[in-house]
Image 1 (cartoon, rainbow, N blue to C red):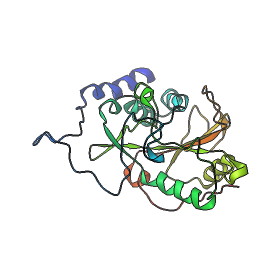
Image 2: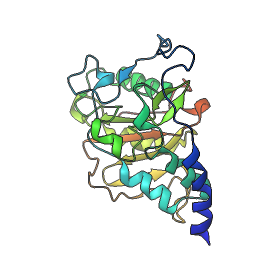
Image 3: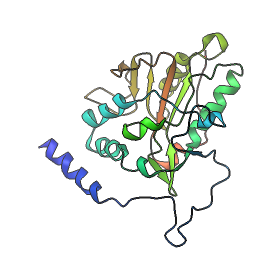
Length: 232
């Protein structure tokens, strides 16, 4: 019964309109918002800015686990993210909340390593279920809702401290955090209470960086409020 109910919720997605980045009137790309760091989806690691450096480590397991073990609302939300829009996104931006988080971490650890930092997924992400895909649409522009922060205690940023402080804060913007073979969700999953650390079953242990995903509501992912974050 539960499976049939979920399928009934999912079926309407088949008729979702294709969202493109061109206006129907002119056929031309609309104006870009100059305050956002834009990039082309599927750029390379040698991109012009660190914002555009691609991520090749995925969070498939975390999102598929939400689909398998979350509420109907969570399942529907995460199913939409799985390729529904990402394949049609050409331009993207990073959510304001994650840019704020990165800026705070940079201030707290000005000499930190950045080697495993990243927002946007590499081209392979187009076929995978990941928050590094710009699957959230805002005015026909894809929004990346995930941030990987490099673990580098010797240069001032302990990703474990970042993950622990954010989890402890229970900030309402957080969807989940992955760090060192563990994951914590802000919502109940598989009968496990929210904000409870549990084993992470993905292929990559996330021991060289911490992954932070934020919820897809604009008031949350674009909030510029300071984060209660620590780097040590």
